[in-house]
Image (cartoon, rainbow, N blue to C red; front, top):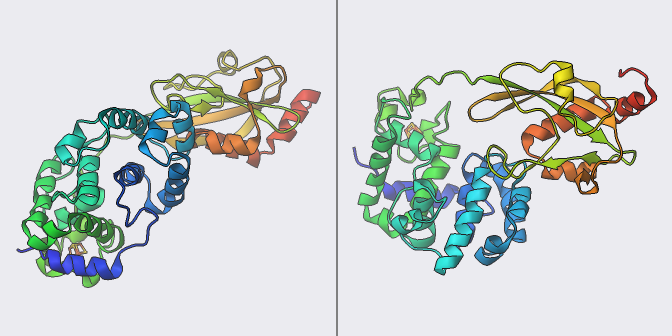
Length: 357
Ligand code: SF4
């Protein structure tokens, strides 16, 4: 089977996606976009990329910003280690005077892994290397009919993907070749229903020829995620402000704002036990419903209590719209629960001693 880089690049020239970070030559902006695109869809990353580079337009601005500002800007995108790594990476890059221009050099920077190093090296510096993300893994598994399941197949898929660079056309345009593979995976060779009749590399595809493409890549069964329970306490002020606190700087959601609450544990919390974790004494009322959020290694089932409360430290009070912007997704789900239930009314009722609806 021979891969036709020429056909793939010709397809890319006609069908490439229009994305806010396309056509970038600045390694800083390419790096930020590639980090953001890991675990975030291109549609969701687009506006957030524009906002991020408006706030942190270059390496020096990002490196010298407080980590809390970077985390705040990342709020809602999830996988917050990415933001911490960007910040630490920017400091290391600034200290060494800028970006190394090889994948090997880039991998020496803290927080830059093999995928990001290859993407920046190919797109910003024209190095002949194929960055292997989930899209490229899928396309490669299908092209070569690799039936070995992920994650065991990763090294093999990565090595096979590099075969694109055997072609002169690919070595002449490594950044475009990489982005052509991203686009092919995102728009044609999609996870559930590959559109093989529209595919520029169909003649070379062993998976399509064998009729097994849609079932690839095979994935090893994952054990179910354990469920953890938490109870959170949303203190409300008369003007609609809500009270938040910062999580400890390291660990899950490290340094992010949160609605105060219990730790998250395997067994549900008894009411009196949970109440010891409220930020202040008040008439806490239960909001109906459960906010569920999937983290990588567990699923959270969180419930909410609300109360009108005064006297908490001033720096924790935030207008509701700002809270929505700076809270991570798990916490936004609790805010949504509060909004659905008319939390201000529940809190007002709790103040007057009447029952919650
Ligand atoms: S022919 Fe089908 S399975 Fe093969 S790479 Fe193209 S879209 Fe994917």
